[in-house]
Length: 122
Image 1 (cartoon, rainbow, N blue to C red):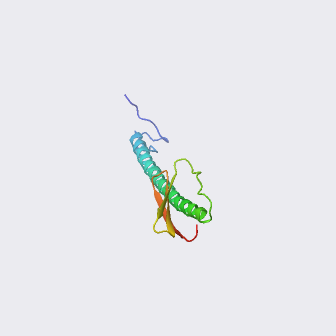
Image 2: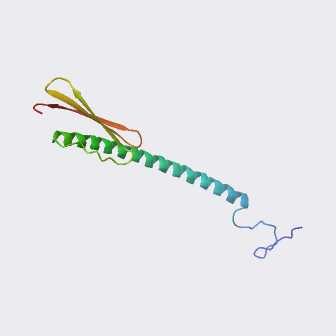
């Protein structure tokens, strides 16, 4: 059997206790954990979006770079980072012009495709 505890000279059972009860602490910890997990998931989604955007912009830059190298008479650079793919397509429309299309695929399966016409003496 529990006996009354004296707090500050008063003889009451728990009337003047300070602090939180165990169920209150557990509920607060649960709410904090759920909130923190939600924020972490939101942060992860933001980071994935930024990564997708960066890779997409990088793919457009690489496609443009490939076409510039071909225009300068150099072979397109074959060195691609792991997970990245490059595809060149050559098409003849008439005897004087040809179309070159560069497709860059990112590791997140996005594609950037640029085409350029080359006309004149080859």
